[in-house]
Length: 221
Image (cartoon, rainbow, N blue to C red):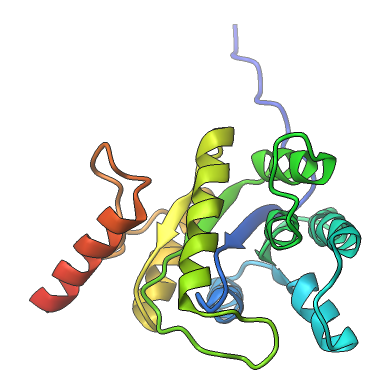
């Protein structure tokens, strides 16, 4: 008697989400990941950040109600790209971040609930660490103190909802290697990435713990 065949995977791309506070290199990393995956023979699509595009078009920050529409549209755009076929869709942020910036980060808000539920269904969530220098873009970035606050809020939301994520540290090629390794593992092409971040203690969700370790490793180099 032969074993039953595994259920076929839905004909859609893997959804890999890059989440993180402002000025953590998400857009640069998304483009670099797409280039690396294409070089390895995989179809890869980047879905850009809708909130940034909205602010650039309007020349202002959205109202809370406008943030709701932006958050929903961000995740819908990723789903649409993923439905087009196999490969990898790299989401340059998610609706959760737009909801957070819109002041919608409380459990009873339907936009916040939808954003968290959507993330639970994604294939991989990469959280960009705070080790990169903060850069003012002259548009919507508030400063390094706010960046740290947003990072803490994101982690609290993900941890509270039980959503798994991987933290990505490093600059340039090192950051790309550390982000690419879990994507390759997802694609069945696991490779060892020297220097990659591995949660190894009970404080694995503590950003201060991570940053202390990162600084120690950087100093040793």
